[in-house]
Amino acid sequence: MNHNLTVERLSVQPEVSEVNDIAIEREPDRGVEPQETAVKERSSRTLNIGFIGDIVGASGVKLTTRAVPFLRQEYQLDLCFANGENAAGGLGINKAVAEKLYNSGVDGISLGNHAWGKWELLETIQEDLRMVRPANGHKTWPGRGFAIFETAVGLVALVNLLGGTFMSPSTSPFDEADVLIPYLKDELNIKYIVVDFHGEATAEKIAFGLAWDGRVTAVLGTHTHVPTMDARVLPDGTGFMTDVGMAGPEFGVIGMDAESALRRFTRRLPSRYQLAKGPAILNAVILRCDVDTGKTLALKPLTLRDQDIPPRVDVNQLKNESE
Image (cartoon, rainbow, N blue to C red; front, top):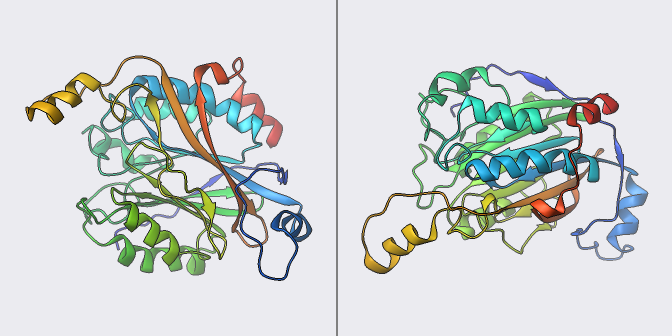
């Protein structure tokens, strides 16, 4: 297990929000009233977390920085996370781009197999307590595999794992989780654990979600840049989505230029990866979490385009109002 442990807590003091009627909700247990009624009787408060799929290039960053203040206000978000591994030029991330995301209201950034796409990150990630790279990467990697955020209703951990199928992690994500997640829950007393499972294979992501159902708040897949239609709460209370999608050029091939992609597919010739031009799209998911159990009560996938976002909201004002 490679955590390079210096456990730091990042303090955020959110308002605890009332439950709103958003689907998708867990199927009711046998013999009880519909889940919506059961949820409201169990707790009238939730911790609300937003998660944005892989941010791709400048257009994805621009749309994200516009969308995050809106999402925080519209869904009363207490925390907002995003996968940023392709945010700088479509491959990797650097300190300058990360700061843009943080300044817009993103609380934590997760990465993936392109974590080191920008070499300068090797020199700065150790100081960035809000950014996580795959926990099952090589033991020599700088940075950390999880980040901890302190809220008014408990500690929240953002965990990053790299899938083992068609990827090259140093250890299995299942083996890593077997050590890391009990450590977070039992040793550090973390109530809410959100796992960004950055993987290629849908079956592996689903298997991981089921393996950890009821023991983590959510397992959210990233990497493919294509949102899946299976967002749901698993039987024992873990929010799950095979892939959240991306924030990046809508009319490209997973964010990249269509012409260069077609060259590879139709002519079997090498072609430089280039970002697609044109308008961007943003895929995200909203989690509403039970403050008593740390489990997910409901989750809602979202797709936003530029025209869906009202005029700029002052994120600093929102944060000040919630403190």
